[in-house]
Length: 143
Ligand code: FES
Image 1 (spheres, rainbow, N blue to C red):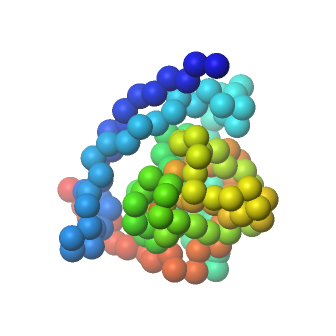
Image 2: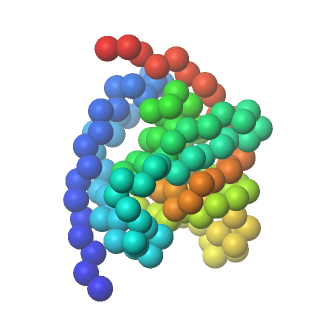
């Protein structure tokens, strides 16, 4: 099976950065041809993500990782590498399904079976409920 890669550019200056934290300007993104999005209407509403215990919700479109979608909604999730290796963002998915932008996210088979996910490289494949006690609401900057 051939998989196409494209670069997806995002304006990341709405993401509050910590001093010294690197800013990622682009990332590889697998075309949404996986089974999770197959047959999905491109005009379909984005999936809804509820973050526990705060109850905050945000839309998670097919074009953004959960980490990015949360950022656009003014919710800062724990993160560091943003490429699926450091596991800083790892959290419990209580309901729903995700797919990944990378072939081998840094989770064991057992962790995946327990519902642990890496939001920095995960894309919603259904409405989700995730448990992120350290999520912080941030004020979005107006341009
Ligand atoms: S931020 Fe490093 S694995 Fe998600």
